[in-house]
Length: 303
Length: 254
Image (cartoon, rainbow over the protein chains, first blue to last red):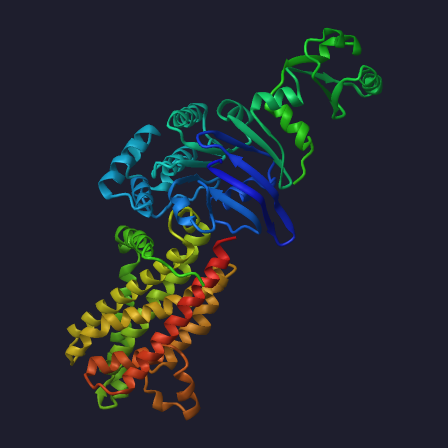
């Protein structure tokens, strides 16, 4: 049995079905990625799992117990890093962590020790007494991640943890998340950063319109939906139809977005170059999770 | 309704810590204003009014000023203060993801609002004592009365806050509810000045029983009607406390 399981989990807001009968099983110790466009239902799903948002239908179990009956107990072992900054602006950096530790009944001395350790880890040790509004966006983000770790959670839930971070800070967060792997901490990671999901996650689920469309290890999803490599062909309008016809004749798996055509599962087939008159307009590149994402959720903006 | 737990203390402690950090930015106003009212109305207007119910005017209004400003403290804390924490700072969202429940957070807010009432009431009582306007040791019970009063007004304020769409909505709360109470609860003149119908109605508004109690405690003239007044306060507090827990859960746990 997984550390978190959901069955038929559904969330409805007035006339919007945000999460639609989701069945999930998250293994203890894994890093589980949730991908999907804005409005796919990721945050709603997470808010139900963290017991802050009531479910419309379905059930959630955390460590084998029904979340309805053990919300407090479950929240005590969870760390949450929200998408929106909700640091306490009335308190200093250090007070933010100490006050948060108190919500978890962590004794004062231990709270102080952990807070200073986390501030050092996230390079905020010289901002102890700064006010929240004096911090840069990146510092706030780092403090939010640190705050999520104050109760040494068994389950860490992160909603876009590295959004707005510079590469150095992002690396710092990634490094910490990878390190939690060896401590057996289960991590659930919502992200739009496909590289992040590929690097960190053992398994990812791609969500759209409240449903999970596909779920598996990143490498497996990539080879299933896109193959090893992808051809990108830039097409002029006059050549468009001929190219599409030729690709269809060859029975290739491709996606046509008008000015650009992506050919999947084409692997090292150099003969594809014959399809276009000017081979400069096509490139072969390794397939990524982004290809999976686009194939499953479409290229157009839905929101 | 889901009950709250002892963990409300954590929310109360959070608010206390913020107060201890920032008190100098708001507390002086809360003290200066009642002193100004006491002096301006009590001495200035009092010179024309003469004796009310056998007391000098400043003696008459002092207990009412204590009760009114204790009411203002809890009301501001649990309308503007709570709304800012809830909507602009998203503080509650962060806290309900910890072992605290919505009910713990709201109970913490109410008891903090009541603590503010206690502090304000106690300071004004001390000032009134310095003006030699307090004549009975029973007045030492006034801080406790202010706390109960605070629970009552904090709960009413939170019920309103849970339904408020925007921060501007509180203008209605203060101009249509709090300010009229300030004038129709027997703070500045005895209720007996009103026609009988208004006298009866004024007992519906919750500041009236509080003023009745503080006035008796300051003068030391105790009578059985105080129990009636306390019973009203407890009942109103209990009803609105419960309602606030329900409506706040509806607003926060979405």
